[in-house]
Length: 258
Image (cartoon, rainbow, N blue to C red; front, side, top):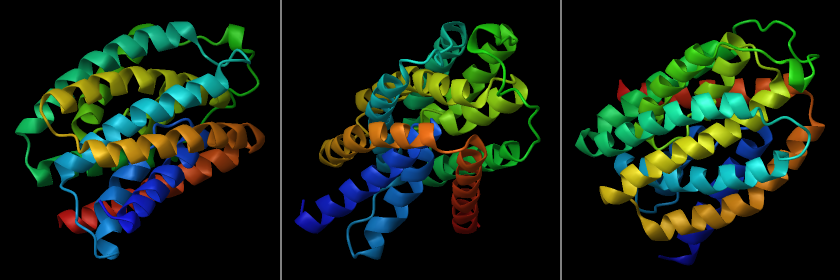
């Protein structure tokens, strides 16, 4: 593992995790395409889709821990929401993480492309103004939340994501949770989800540990910095950044598939 390789992997992890901490996502939606496409641009070895999804799963696990820690005060972590969606997404991500071993490279990329496209579409559905509601008065459909989390977990487990890039628009649009509570709670749910995905990837031997270690170090530094930045930025700006990233990523994946 050369120095140039280590620096590039660290930068990928740092950028992905900073943005993830800011937006309340695990970062796989950003890191997946960066790991897939950036190393070959510098003449370095290309990762397979299996390796990228496994490295992303481990990185997301650590990025979300530090993100949740940054949001622990302020009443934005909704424990009931985290309980219902967390259990469902853990089951889904375990199944997806194990099942990904049986899938082809292009199959994993297609699942990623579908998830990114869905997330991009959902980001543009108009949201009712929920941001003025005090945290204690937020209400939502618990069983709908659980079913949607199970479905997200399956897809997220396959591509090594925590699923927050889908959870965030689902929580904003379908469950009508205020933005700051969505960002904080989705990090906690994504952490639970990434446990399942990571176990599935490790036990089926898909993880490149050296690269994963560099990504984890980068995420532990960058994710809390992103969370601090996220508290200072307007929610409309945060949603715009997330939508732009997801659309660019989905476009690149689909161009490659076809």
